[in-house]
Image 1 (cartoon, helix red, strand yellow):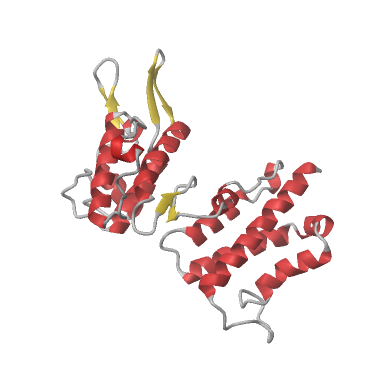
Image 2: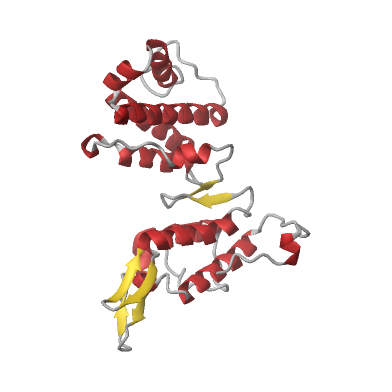
Length: 268
């Protein structure tokens, strides 16, 4: 798809109102159709090889069964604008297709698939419509849909430093915590569990925190966990606070501390 802007877009003459669910559905179906035509779902759906023979994709013989097995819903495919998709249906399908999209290319050795290239392009296309739906959503690099992160916080969330030592790298725990916290349908319990998971990562690296952080900074980090009724019950814990305000504040502080700690370790 070309990035060409048309007259009213170039001169900002047309202000887009946030998309309705019906508009989101139409645009999702159109993007899916265009990507299908460009071959981005051949590895999933299947394709005709250079001899004209049909090669089954990862879905096997039945796409509906493939989708049903993974998200617990049937009747969502084939993708069609006449299907009565709910918001969570569209979001589920977007996340599912992200897992299996790939760039397809015919080479002298046969069909080649590049998942990383496919995912990047899929995110670019999908986020153009998700960003204008309601208050604004986005498909994260990890493949889950979340509300758009602002004020540069997306770079902290998506680019947390990884350890050079693979044996000590708790990347999966951190990624799981981010998904639990930021997923569009995350509950308060999910967010609390995510904060506790990050706290557990900090506990694993307490020796490194002792080395690279001053005592007050380290104490402040663990006080966030211990003083806001997140773990280790005690009489001095704060219970009457606005979770919508304080949970993000706690989560971002812990994530930033992990990022800083890992950067220090990698410099050693």
